[in-house]
Image (cartoon, rainbow, N blue to C red; front, side, top):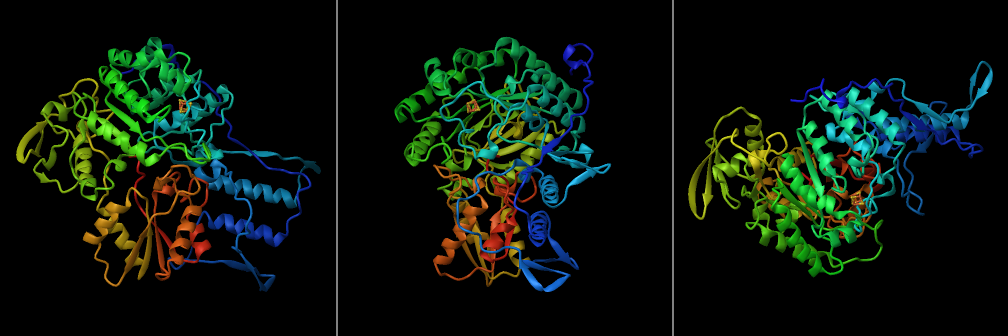
Length: 610
Ligand code: SF4
């Protein structure tokens, strides 16, 4: 337990509430707007926030007429004019589009009127929230609040994902004191039990530990909640003293981007002037008993051979200091990062996958490849197989003798049919107060009975920081409930020709599940994979598709002349950021329907980085 009276960090903050301000785009002399166009713009903005209904049924509209002139119909969604595509969007339009609407409303009012105070014209260039607590929404957890402090980085990695992010997601640091006051206000409004808090403002976290008041913020969070805080860090500031201070804020879990255990390569790769700090931090974290994972982005330069040799050396080195697990991410880059092809992605990814698989069994800590589905997607049989790829050292699963490659057959006497079910059961059991968890596994053709004791564990496992009793799967698999959701939507919409757009990683397993389980009578279902045109580069993740990519995929499908769908189904994960159905450009998924003239529905599925 944290002693809140003992340490200076735990002095209660007496800061004034932060004022959330938003600038208005007030261009003097802007072209005067047609009043009818102003109404149309408002209606379009509103229709991106809500559905109109009549007697419980959704009503779609594509135009309006003014009561003063009912004959004149105004089209809401005329054909988009060709020209350069809009590259920027405001994160506000993604995370809290109602605020984006308020801003739009204010700006368009100021286009047609001027405000006065006591008879004199008042210039307005922004607005502020009257009551922040009116803007509460589901925000995730403590780590998401802390992410607002991670607005800058002290390194300059050759592969930095911030360089490959769309402009709206690039870090926009403000004065540290302003960020500090804002985060304190966020903490004060945070309701830990429900994960409700003030709407988020920015994505793209950089280095948390660089914020000069990070320890004060951790202390403030600890006064509010005892939940686990997971912090990604590049490790460059993880000196002995910092680690010692961090131990005061347990339960903490650190994802340390080591990337290379060679000082020469880390200096080159991350442009880290003091690579030894991060490299030595592994042993310090172990000594301090702080659980962590090691993150490695293998970067295929100067050659794939150098990358693989370094990957092996780095894993061998870090494994000695007991990370809970390794996360090895396939190297990716978008068109914002590089216009030209940087390397043969399939070749490099395959080489990394083979290396990771070969390393398994030789390390104490499990190796997870990210994205997990890449490992198995070409083998749909294995995607839902309840076989762990590893077990966290000293976890209840490890202590009970579970091994990588065992297939879980039963848990507490319940038959385990697939991986998503195994994971759900393990999550429930992890949170339960059971003393013993019987498990039967298939090993080398025979059956082995094991008994897991949740209270038997040691470092690096900590039940507060990792789940599933220490059992690690390659990916979360594809829940059969996904097919049920799909069927429900198709039946509800009375569709007979359905176009289902999915991602490259999901398609083979989804195709198999549909063929085996879906049994849609009198429904033709086509499965297609859109290309990530917007992100470009070698990005192929479905979660990074945007409406524009879906529009192109539908047009490509129509060009095949197989028939015109009466329903398009999209996975919900590319629109998961805020709960407002927006893609990463802030475009609402309904835009696809307007652009192609075919009804669109979302089917719930979790983001792939699970
Ligand atoms: S540590 Fe992360 S944010 Fe910083 S330069 Fe490297 S990739 Fe970018």
